[in-house]
Length: 295
Length: 157
Image (cartoon, rainbow over all chains, first blue to last red):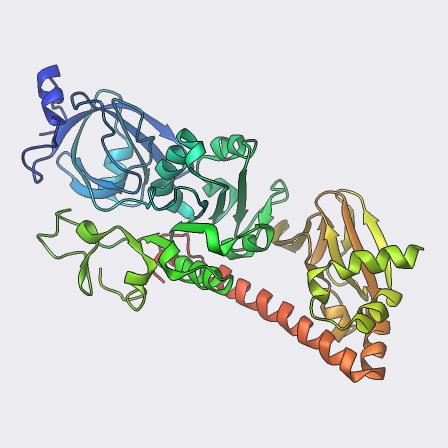
């Protein structure tokens, strides 16, 4: 595939056959539907998909390997609504050649997709419980599908709390969406930034400072965390201090994933392959492994 | 009547959780209710303000001015403490504090609080334990903030 690749409907339909692709190492060609600018360096890429049997193409928390033709392949979390048909959505921070190539695509351009891969957020285990989502920076992207899922199946879950920290107001993802969600019943959305200017009237401080404004009931809460590893460590410490059991804490890990299916070993962390055994892990399995620099 | 009302408000404030009732009463006798309008500057950097505030409701921003711009470095909200240094020292303020909305607080004169702590060491010890907790929490938050963990470089820290 190259940058000028063209698509036939038959080819694109064949990319997502019911039951999954025949070869997990073969990127499926997808057409870019649109690219939206989220912040000064982060973009949301929406790909068209055809085929499949109408069931969700991924589970919240999973990722794809996205291939920018001629540049490189990267693991990117899926950030869209799992139940919205015909679309795969990714939020990408432009930090290198491959991510830059992806976010500068135009509608109709070609992108290769492998996956979805990996484990998902514990949406089944969370039923009947309060759900606490804690995100930092671009870590909100892999958690957004879980929020979509909860909002689509609102009766299955109790109170939804989202705590989101970003570096500054200009780095905050999905600001309009977060603002809209604050009006939903039984939903608490709190955002904070590490540094703010005078026009920012929200909270300033690290994301853990938001805990004091929440009503956490540890015996009926499940927590899902994604962000820089150091942030997740502090969040876990805060949650445990407030009585949440380790079995009710889940987090999404990131390492240098290459194959996506546990063949290559690039993303190995202790006994785990992040791409295959994760990226979503119960905290109990990550205790002792967080902070290990194996990238 | 005003004091009874203040006592009731104070009893619900997280700062005094675990205080003996007589110590809450002592603290209440030293405090005054305060209402601040939105955008009111509570104190400025360098001010020798000697007040210590327990925020009941509302949000307060701590700001620092550097290189010609004002940066908001922390916000404090319901149930938090503002101006802890007033209880320990009478030196000038290190930050500017601004009410981001209507703020209701209980305000104490730092010098009078220090005197009360000197007179009653049990009360003073409880006060200092809590103030140390506030300082430790702020120090820890500042350390995490300094990691700049959401930047591409900071994320690898």
